[in-house]
Image (cartoon, rainbow, N blue to C red; front, side, top):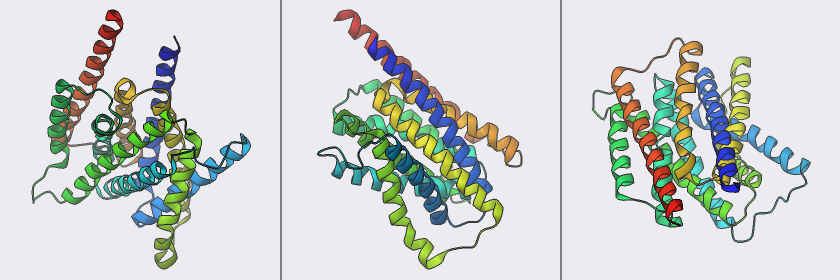
Length: 297
């Protein structure tokens, strides 16, 4: 019963995270021509304040769990790289949902990295699903020289790789007993320190609307970060990662109503269908394998 409850909690957390991150993507786009590194700085600054307040209010430690500091540094480096790629894609691509879908390749990479580094089970059929999902991502990226959004598309895809690797570190630290709130705090502090020089030496003045949008980016990002960290703390990626794809639905709806009726083209929609189908199929396959294992035990 406890495992079932934890899985349900993980699903609720990942749905909340998906909704929050979709809001983040919308507000990134609405903030306009603010430099990407400036957007990344304010996103993490707001999240840092929220994480600091949460830790202080609950009287939790501001120190990492024993043996986790190196994983915090690795997770933060990978996560920041993935975030920069995602923000660049979201800012430069004409369809915000395209950028969101490329970032949603991260659960596939979480499975790959979890297999390599955490020894979580990985089957040939899952490898096939990942290969097909990668093929689906090519319909979104459209890797041709005539595609003026090729560079942002590649950046978005690499952002998904970085996020997948980062979430693997989150999962590993959770297994070691690390506090999820401290993980968010450390990542936010690390990101603020790394991006601060870009503001010190090249700050771009912003309008009132841009200030409001970037504050909301940070608020939504903090909600998404707490949600995703809690989700992977409660349950392994094989059980809950499929629900993260609701982010693309939320982003597409928001993009249509809030961003001048943005709609993805047919090739992108085909890519969405392929990637989401593989995610759903992998979720069903994993559940079937687990049920069979439980029945035989």
